[in-house]
Length: 605
Image (cartoon, rainbow, N blue to C red):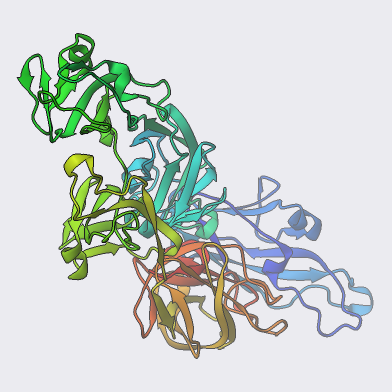
């Protein structure tokens, strides 16, 4: 029995005719095949010439791939057709010898429909945009998947990264990727595939990566499940305004004499923008406790913004109280503002950046003041920071009572973990106030680093389907199960028993079994672990379900699965295993398939 593909010629090999010579010692060699009767559908040719009943086809022609069967156009079936043949050896007929099998044998011809052969999907080059210092989480739609050459079309299964970006990092769940890695759809849908630009860098077409989409149609019968062309993902990084900086200063005037401020008094710089923005305004955060501060003759209020044009025009004036003086006499707090704006989360005002608390002290006051609240100035780059269930924004203050009540909470992204997984900056504030120029806020941003331990689950069993050509034999075997993470960390391994059940007849001459893997206990992190299965037996007559007879695992792509604490099961379609043999006999090679995609790995989700 051999299997051809619809509208495709099948080229015979000598092994298809199962030649043996058990009655001669030493055994003779195959010399030719006699075609006794012809197929009733399709054509049998030798070197392009139609074969006639009674023709002998030499083994050299067969070895050269000249004997072929071509089914009728669009013809399919299992069985589709047959012909009979007799093998001939090279021992001759001297002294009444017999060199030809006296019994005609039947060659059964199966022709599989073209639906069994997957055609390559197509991705689409695309451009995505993120903000400076902000990661971009890819979605499935970003890769422009389509499958125009299959009907019905297959679904997106994974994305292969063929080349990496040069101006940032590409990660899955925080772990760096390598060129050639396949990212399953489930990881993309969970927001785990992300690009992070280099710090404080950006621009139009700032970076790019190349990719290929993979569908779930598999590679059975030499199908193609991956785009033949690498597509380009262009990465725009929008520059975001960075905060300017002012400078503490002391100015001097005479008793009973107003002081007219100039722009240089506020020490404006913009060191983190290239090119630097211009000085735009000054925000008055607190008023002097003595004297008056006016803008163009109008008293300034706390929180007022004074434009640099007003300052340059001499409108911002401090007038001391009559007949009073001192060194220092009084002070006020201010923030400088640039003209870069706040688009995309930009910061145009001078900030002392901060985030949550801990380690509060007040060593410069006697008696020390009490801890009052924390200013969150920069947010974590991953995960979420909430106060009483409400997302915290940069610049928010969180009271110490809320912290003591357990309301300030950090939650990492789903299935994400790592050492130094995220951080934010913060400044503590005391309850001493700012009267007479006092300072109640730590002037130096502090960093809170967040380590996140993985959520571990235990795999104890899983199962998959096995399809076997009718007449082939199959036995239970043991497998070595190894679990490892994206980054290669091995979490454990063990030998598991594989048993078979079922044997239901299905289409195209296959029998279907269920294989169940039990007897293993491996703990792995949710969302990041792979199971790799390989034959634990290095030599056996009837080898493992898949792979070669050498005890090694195959190079594979990924199958998305679902798992709870008790078991592991395949999700999203049939996990199947196909017999690579073509005629009844002992199985000598196996390929495990998801849909029809070659694989022997599963991702734990």
